Length: 137
Ligand SMILES: [Zn+2]
Image 1 (spheres, rainbow, N blue to C red):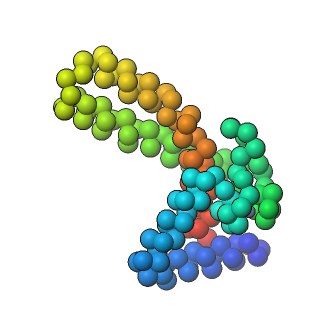
Image 2: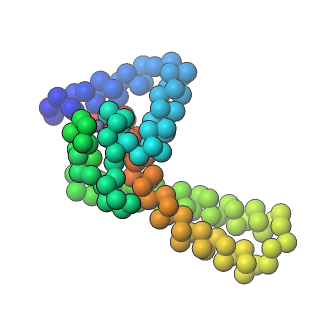
Image 3: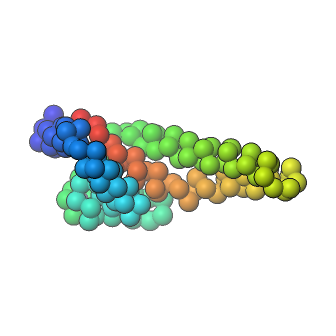
């Protein structure tokens, strides 16, 4: 509905009509934008006002960041998934290729699983927002 939804649809179809090189370039731009914690539409406005608190709208282009309530639950899954995908294989790699004792290995990855989601929190929200902005129609 509305102008912004039509614009998103156009962006969506533009992406799928792109050459593979164009897609890689575009994905690179999304990832770069995500890790700079900037607005997906204008690339200028900041997403966060404090470490954990997001702006509701972009200060530059007025894009609404939380499109509906519960919108960022997907970002929590993304954060959780990233933590598991790093911690589990790493644990088994350490187990197999180092002589690190069992409890030390377990402690390292348990600690990692507690700290990483906090550090990745902003990026998971930013990635979610950026990918959703480009792909959903
Ligand atoms: Zn913006």
